[in-house]
Amino acid sequence: LSRLKTVDEETMGESKLARVLTVFDLTALGVGATLGAGVYILTGSVAKDTTGPSVVISFLIAALTSILSGLCYAEFGARVPKAGSGYVYSYVTVGECCAFVIGWNLILSYVIGAASVARAWTGNFDALIGNKIKTHMLSCCSMDVPGLAEYPDIFSFAIVMLLTALIAFGVKEFALVNKVFTVLNIGVILFVVIAGLTQADIHNWNWTTDEIHDYFGMVTQTTIDMTPYGTGGFMPFGFGGLISGTATCFYAFVGFDCIATTGEEAINPQKSIPLGIVLSLAVCCIAYLAISATLTLMRPYFLLDTLAPLPVAFEEVGMSWASYPVAVGAICALSTSLLGAMFPMPRIIYAMAIDGLLFEFLANVHKKTKTPLVATFLSGTLAGIMAVFFDLKELVDLMSIGTLAAYTLVATSVLLLRYQPDATPGDSKPITQSTESFEIRMLIQPKSSLPTQTVSSIVNWCTVASGMYLRSSVKTNLTALSMTLFSVTAVLASSSGWNGASIAFSVIFMICSILPMICIGMQPQSNKKLSFAVPLVPTVPALNMFVNIYLMVSLPPSTWYKMLIWLVMGGMIYVFYGIRNSAENPNNKARAEEKKARETEMK
Image (tube, rainbow, N blue to C red; front, top):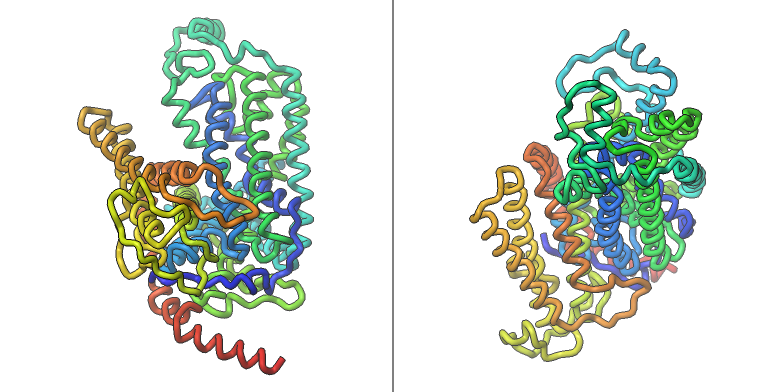
């Protein structure tokens, strides 16, 4: 369960897939997957109901917290340039069982993501043609079954399978189409910002309660309840509204991790993957900030439309013609978002199959297209079927658990590796055991200026449940456990009200989260040179862990029940197939080495 993936530096760059993706391709992939239709819709709904004009600050905070995850992914992209994203990263540092759970959850996240975006694509296109598809399908084949969609969305299935064929045809062709849609989307966003700022009014960030009351009084000629509109000003819903909006805005930045699945298709992945992740997050941050500022300057926050904020805002300022470019931008955004959700699915499956944790036939790569053909069509068909029959609104939260869990494990893995004695992640060569014995004072005053086995053990004890090299012993997850307990306390107190007990427990758990990080910060770090390294370790990974754990705990219990069912299904595959067929199984590894030796002799 705790065996690690072996990564050989000599063969790290070898791949059966085509290495054709440039930094621009990777940046376009990340921007397309992250900058979806939410940029046209989410801003209005959050500003009106949760934050007011301070939605700009919410997006800024959300962007900064997302960058924490992005930096951790970037370092691992430099360390381990292999397909598989968070699955591979956790496999080389934490262990096989944990890696399988992450990979299995990521598959579900991407499948649900692709299916939900496909339905949104159909709904958006249908709205442009007067809902003719919906009207026809409801009249001929309505489905009145709880949990299922109103009607079978055949159009979504067709879109998914068309893009599946594109991805299977070749990664170079896929990258070209994705770049076209992404550039069009960015062009529309620039148009919206420039055109919108011509109608900007700074007073829309400073409406007072009296002005709002007088405005509605003149319109309705009645006394109104001011509760839905807050207290006016830049932060009408206070600091609580700002933080609540930030949590919602955080999910707008989910998607950049698809870049990390291109480790075996990127040119010079150890440099291009970190650069692609950082650039894509920077572009998305600027885009969300620009759109949110423009929208709230064009119209008062309390008059924004939650379903189509930009078209309605342009119509209200006498620029109704601008709704057409916005509609085109939304279609392009949904297209790139769909491509960004579908592209990583087969890569995760392929990586797990190559490692023997999923069925071997899923690792087949087509000789001509150099893509994992079986995995591509299988995952695409599954996403298409879900898009046809299921009402995915209740399943969307499952996407969040898989993604946030992967973010947490990647941050944890960065923390572990930074304090390991210099070696390649997952290197099969044993590290020489240190002769120094542990002393309490070494928690804050280590004896060595470089990481040793004792330093590694201290960091493991403070951070994760199983050690890198002392894998036979179970360790206490001090930091993550304390963060989880603090998050549970905070979430429960937020819903039922804070009292003396909840405040006391929160303070205790926060202190228990901070103290191990202080001990880790006192330990010497590895001086191994990387093409990219996370700055401010252990602060950045620790903050990343906390944000992700808090967001996971905030999800409703029903989401965790559904995730448990999915994990049970995956657990059966791992127990009855994965453990025995794993490439890291000593028996399989010995046979593989013998086969490799025979092939070398024949050459």
